[in-house]
Image (cartoon, rainbow, N blue to C red; front, side, top):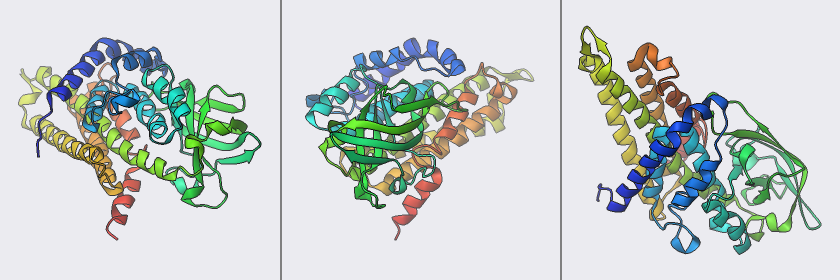
Length: 377
């Protein structure tokens, strides 16, 4: 087993780190304060090929592996999770199902345009009444001549207010079975779809929406893959994405750790840096050890993805460990900074607020525990 990053992986890390410093860092404060995402960054990501990192070259991607994808995520999140969230909601949640199961026309119209950043995507799955329970989603797709009518609502959908298209999970059969759930690729804006922007405590610059479908008509060619029944695609997408968001969690933890370490080196008490005090040094030591442990878990999950060996329980373990680590590390960063930790001129409060999103989003920590526990039976 080789634990070293390849030359290509190191080049990806350096590229994204430089991009974050030059292009994203100047935008973070304004984006967070105004809770608006600078959509022009999508074209820049597309020009660098960052959306296609793990997709095959023959499909327009860069042909790299899931570890490269995780490296991109960690670097983006170490700068600002809001930007990483919008990138992730597009590059994986919106594009992966189209790449995996879309028709040739859907791949050309949405996947390739999405890789280039010419179109921004969203993935509409979560609902007000069902949350993480996919099997019981209530949004319906009723077959009519020439297409379907969408009826229902979706909640907490990343990128919805800025998206040019979205994948919508809807029930195409009345019974509560997995085979009854299908995906539709829907162009936006749509006169019969209302999107309301939500205000959040975390990932504030990543625009999130409440979606209402008022008998919204979509044509037959909006059905993903041209056939009903997309439940396996949704599950596989979510499992792989749990490895991805775990890399985001490592990035948030690392960003908070680095800010706390810099502060501990320069903050003087009784004439010496607080890093010299054992209580601070031990706290930082625990943070560093937890981050490295979580990163190893994430890379193991990515290794499984690349070998088509990722199971639902492993994905859940990776997400549980990484996201809970991010919450602990970012809270400890605030404690090290003391009063400065709750001042907005320092990033640790933002990292902590953002980390709390991910013990909820993409399946709560308790949902991950349920998945792991079921694997014992």
